[in-house]
Length: 242
Image (cartoon, rainbow, N blue to C red; front, side, top):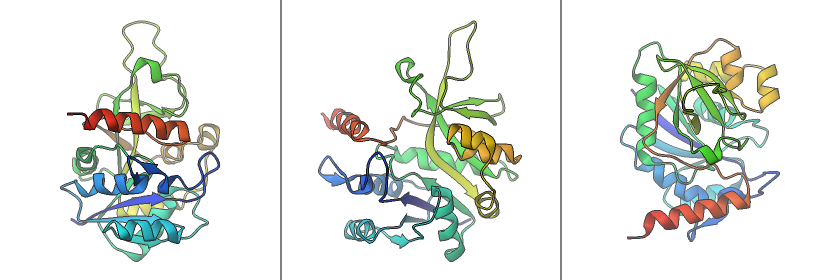
């Protein structure tokens, strides 16, 4: 069973151009993600898939492996599917390049969530969300069935709790795919719910795929803006204080 982790890292960003190379605690953000994935035990190979030679050079300077992919890739999944057409494996991991605080243990848990059943096609992770962050549309929430299947993902707080203590779950920026499933979902056209929420995983749910949700070992933070980078810097400094 060959497992390849791919970190999609796109230079262009409307809200934060060049964010993979933005400095975080003295190193480019993408290098933090690379080192987190390298700490995983169930990954055979780690690649950064990028559309920009500057990011590729940065990754190689840090001792990592980078693959140049098309600038026309519409999503991280499309970029990883392009890598999969060149480099065969049984399982591919999508670890988003703007998740610099992703615990290395989460990588292994995502692999485990996929391989826990022979018929599982897609897997991801979730973590309990702080009450203060529930209303943040950049913090994606997920509703999960008792057996671990994702029922829905949303930027809105889900479910709506009319009674009982709320227990919201935050979706983390990581996916695991079987090779055939990756090729299939990358070929799907955009769906209505995906367009409404700007969440590509809703395209997969609408197409009838099951996404299994594992329990993350720790939280992460997606960096979409310079303000998010400042928060990541604060959290990283807090973690390194003896």
